[in-house]
Length: 80
Image (cartoon, rainbow, N blue to C red; front, side, top):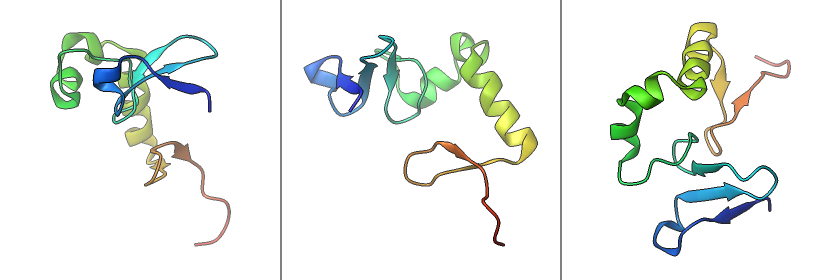
């Protein structure tokens, strides 16, 4: 895999991409927010001005779906 824990204390949620070095949260899929819960971070000014928040807004506006397992934005491939 291309993900590695960044800190043993946070090994279940903090990840670092071995390709680009970005540290992010495995739970909410945004840049790592040390010392804040996912909910706290998503209410912060740092998040609200981020590309991640802009993308989330676009996902909601367009009515796109996310995979229930990995939360990746997916496109319906035919079918109903």
